[in-house]
Length: 239
Image: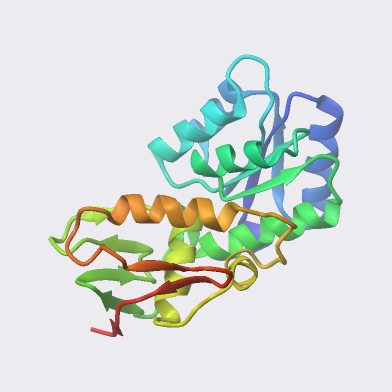
């Protein structure tokens, strides 16, 4: 995976940017550092990017704005990195579509581990010519195609999910009518243990509910279990 994977680092601090790029290269990735959104756009115009490591606090266009654009224009996954470690900042980053969030100062091994976890979830989208196994689920008239990473509403319309939202819903669908705790969901979808008071699962559940809302069968589909976690209440079938 690493030999074919390109990671863009958007960081206005040249020293940090060079260090992160060097770290990722030593791990076998192709990596390039740039100082802002304009440079990232020029890079995107000439090559495929598999992951963006994006600083929140940037001069000019900030990381939140860049993340919103990436989400609106495509499915490039984003690992947001910032010196601001407040819970509110993490939630805002996830709300605009970041796949994960890492606060500075960070352990280099943790950055690599989180990058690998995101790439594992999205590598199928970048594997040219790969034949994917059929893994489709029907629940409450929704159809989720794991191979194509697609979700269809009861009327057949496509429902757009971020990479993190898709993986969270897929985990619930694979374990229907079973209460899954927040720690379990973080471990299974992100490949890591949860941090204290990590609310990222709650934020993504809320986003999924909003995207499913108003469609037949969506009412009460994902239930919150007080003190326990979340449960997909519908029966799941393999069509």
